[in-house]
Amino acid sequence: MKLKLKNMKYDIMSGFSTAAIALPQNMAYALILDINPVYGIYASIISMLTATIFGGSSFLIVGPTNMMAVALASGLDTFKGSNYLEVIFLTTFMIGLFQYLFVVFKLSDLVQYISHPVIVGLSTGVSILIITSQLKNLTGVEITGANILAKLWYFFINLGEVNYLNLSVGFLTILFIYSLNKINPKLPNFLLSIVLVTILTTLTGLTDKILMVGKLPESFIDFNLISFKWSVIRQVYPQAFSFAILGLIQTMTVLQSVALKTKENISYEQEFKAQGLANLTTSFFSGFAISGSFSNTFANYQAGARSKLSQLFCAFAIIIFSIFLRPAIQYIPIAGLAGLVITAAIGIIDIKDIIPNLKTTKGDALIFWTTFLATIILPNLDQAVYLGVLISLFVVIKISKEPQVELLHYQRKNDDYYLHEIKPGQADLTSCKVIDISGDIHFSAAQNLTDKLNDLYTPNSSYIIRIRKVKRIDITILKVFSEFTDTVINSGGSIKFTGLNNRIYQMFINYGLAEKIGDDNLYQPEKGFFEATKKAIKNID
Image (cartoon, rainbow, N blue to C red; front, side, top):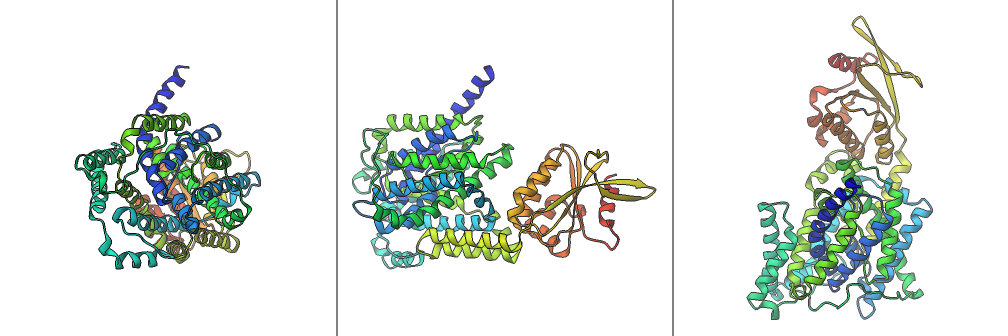
């Protein structure tokens, strides 16, 4: 019981810390949809409460995200008008329904077959779309156009309409965020920046000259009956289907990223079902589509979360903040929230993740560029999602095979070693584990390979991974090798790779894996059978 109470203390602290980041962010994401920021609060509270009940992760925080907001904004742009909110709620309901059905019919497993370059291309493209979407709120210039190129052209030919007070407030917010992060990264820099900008605009009398959030509704729980119009359903279901996939992709990526740090066992089926139910529920309480949040999930982890109750306390904290800060929230400048959104969007662009996708293989680079360009050029984000999914499935069908992973036993006789496969039930008493991998292995086999390597893992052990019979790998498999290398080295063990052909050896260099492992721990093939592996064993023995 004491342990549970101790964990609850940490969950309360992490929940309130995360809420300080999530509240201003989620209000700002509503601006991407061009709706009142209060709808971001609704979506935060209801989705977190629902996900806490049905989810299982101790660290995941769901809620409005940049990517889902952009998806809705691009897909529903033609519906802007008197019934725009009704269409948003209906689409959110359909997204949740599709996600739930994906799990019921075991279709959610297909999300794991979407390659890493597709995810990086989507997220990078979305960051550009987000920045563009906030030019109106940042500068006051109305922007129109079918895609990003048309919108940017329209913006540049109307630069004379820029509201420099708006622009100053937005840039000041961005400056505050980066400055506070430099002073202390642990500070809730988004919340503090919005507070500082709100105080400054109020004291200087700018509240009558720039656009503010305005008075909030009295209730923070706003139940509504969704209008199920068949004519609208027929128009939005293709977008809802692709956005459902997009939401699961983002949540899967967040879960995988945090699991690398926490070693938490993840039930994707449970988390995906919880996300579907969260979207279904949120749609009835005036919220828009949600997914797993990178920034909030990692903030929750870093703040010391111990169980899924941390998400419950985050929801409670947002309610408390919203009640006590209600008089102040109406004076938050829209340009300040736009600066917050732009800063968050810049944070999505991960150069360290993009470069390996471009340098590792031509196939990975092609997938990245195709997805990225489709994201920023095509009129709707759902089209880019479909294209990314099709590319991934095509690669799976054409070249993917399940990797063959075998544990080899070796015996020393004089100055030579004899290697053979360990038979079922035979104990391996050697000083290091020799793992033989064969087959062309690609992103679809990543989870299978990860599971097999983890099954063979023991702390503080030495490993030799032989890939002589592997002719082709991709960046996702390199990531699996990199993560397994980190696990081995961090536990006090050592690792070597043998049988690397010239192509794979160059990929290890381009990805940065050769530097991490050490070039003297990489062995290229030699003429004799197992010669490179024998050299590696000799250096360990």
